[in-house]
Image 1 (cartoon, helix red, strand yellow):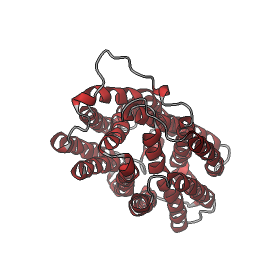
Image 2 (tube, one colour; image 1 turned 60 degrees about the vertical axis):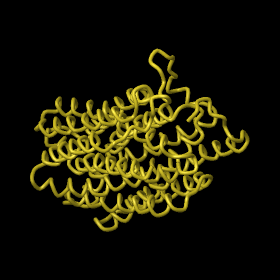
Image 3 (cartoon, one colour; image 1 turned 45 degrees about the horizontal axis):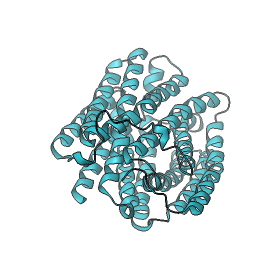
Amino acid sequence: MKKQMTVVMLLLMMVFIGFGIVIPVLPLMITDAGANEFHLGLMLSLYSLVSFIVSPIWGSWSERIGRRPIILMGTLGFSISYLLFGLADGQLWLMYISRFLGGFFSGAVAAVIVAYVADITTNEERTKGMALVGVSIGLGFTFGPAFGGILSYYGHNTPFYVASALTFVTFLLGMVQLRESLPPEKRSKSGQPTSSRWTAFTGRMKYLYVLSFFVTFTLAGLEATLLYFQAQRIPGITPAQIGFMFFFCGLAGALVQGGIVRRYIKNGGEKKTIAAGLLISAVGFFLLLLSSNVVDATIYLCVFGIGNALIRPCVTSLITQKTPVSHGLASGLNSSMDSFGRIAGPLLATAVFNWNVNLPFIIGGVLCIAVIGLLVRFSTLDRDSGPMKATINN
């Protein structure tokens, strides 16, 4: 398992470095094309809408043909989508096509890699495995935006070309090193009836999925408006400075996931950790309203990042531990909820930003506190029902 986890972590980190590289320049590419910030919200939402629709399909296909080919296909598709955005050169229609393709292939990477890790870990190791997934994503978001900010000095298109090249190298690495995690005897057969994604959305589990949606919803709203917000609070702020803000935020999150969640959060401790993470995230949102310079804005963003880092691996671990359906289906639905949050989050955040620049952060903080109620409801039902018997052998 150790070698497989190392390969998966490296793949995820490289993919999300490519993803993070474009964060500091994506808003500027859109404004360079003569469009306003609402187009950023639309593009982010289109990406996530497509991912929301197709993620469970990727998950189901991975149950039939294995995880490896789906992960490789998604990685190659990512590379093509970045290349198209770099070539767009101010053409909005080509930018939208690029975001469509990125969303189409994203579920093939994110959802299926979570299922891959669930395949190779036991319930007792699951939280540790998901924390390592979170560390890999966090490291990608740590280094990606910083690289993107630096690369922006060579042109706003440059980060997209580098992201495309890096993701293609990741595809080649996967071709050579990634082993299949789902043996043929455990795969579903062609022609067998397949369950709907909503099979997993039942009983106590639905509260976890809705919680996962709101966590992503608030995060996506922050990502969509942070550059525009800080540009008003800190005149003259550059893409490189935004990139380094995300660098330190990602570093803080990776340290938390690698040093706390992986080492100290054992099977059974996830619920308290999620509650703590939601409260810390809320504090981060409210602190960002007080931003006055790059240093304090970075510190406040790191507070938010630490809270988010506590939540995500624990939610994913609980879902894969408690689900009554297969890992592929559960991970596909969780990825869909993540995508749904990324559909609605940027649209609402960019809309209310035009009304009042503080509103995306106020809404984010309030929601982080409010969804603790969903966690309490899940915990109550989980305690009352006892261990859930899986209907499919995970």
